[in-house]
Length: 163
Ligand SMILES: [Zn+2]
Image (cartoon, rainbow, N blue to C red; front, side, top):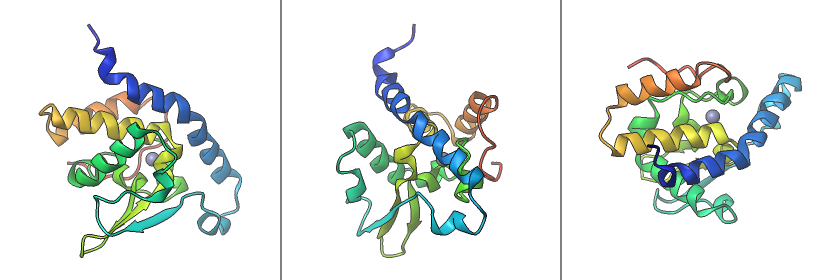
């Protein structure tokens, strides 16, 4: 029996956002190459630590804020999980962590990326991975599950090195 309660927030979020994701894919396909970086749809914002969420999340649902906070605390996991939304091509992402966090500074400051706020696939992959990680699955097992789940009907995965 499926535990609907557990999956409800994720499903809700992605139902909301799946449109935004395919839009950005389309957009990048039509854009000339030289415009891709400068006209990038993705906003980045720095805060002084993972405890301080960026202001672009202010008007976003609580589930999304929680997910951003969890992603920042599960860097090792998500740097090993590919994203299948097409962001490898459109935004040069290397893994699912890149959809949420642009950069980590040595002093603990963090530069957030709003890419995932517009993308149901990014959110869903991160949420599922973190959920499984908390349930005790290994990063390798999670990676396998994600690759399996998204191999058909989704964009090319990010070039995330194999474990
Ligand atoms: Zn992505």
